[in-house]
Amino acid sequence: MTRTESLISIRPEIPSIKVMEDMTAIETFQNNVIRPILKYQHDVIVSYALTKAVARNSKFNNLITIEKERYLDKVTLKDNKVKQELTGMVIGLMTIEELQIYLSEEQEYKRRINTMIRKRIVSTF
Image (spheres, helix red, strand yellow):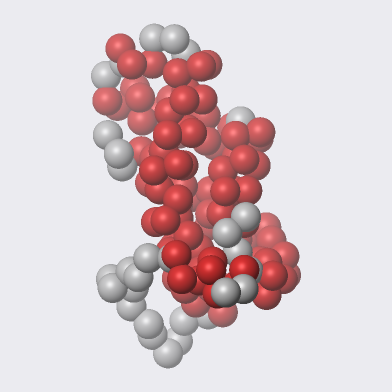
């Protein structure tokens, strides 16, 4: 089995994804590549973000839910190192062909990935 076949085979199916004829190439890539990777990496991403949050704020576990959400949002939005590492967790599971597509619209895909990651992390509370 090739690397490409292996990567594609581990991605979960997401039945809720609606395929529409008027979707842009960016939306199609997001739904077919990024969302399945994020779903597959969910536990790792959340664990990583929580570990970073606790390391930066020893009282994190004592915060109320809304404060935790705000703090996690701050960590994932403002800390460039954390953002890069979280994005890397997604990019690392792309095929070479998908990576080329990602690089063609890198800024837009990074923005979308960061937005989806923040939503995933905050929704765990």
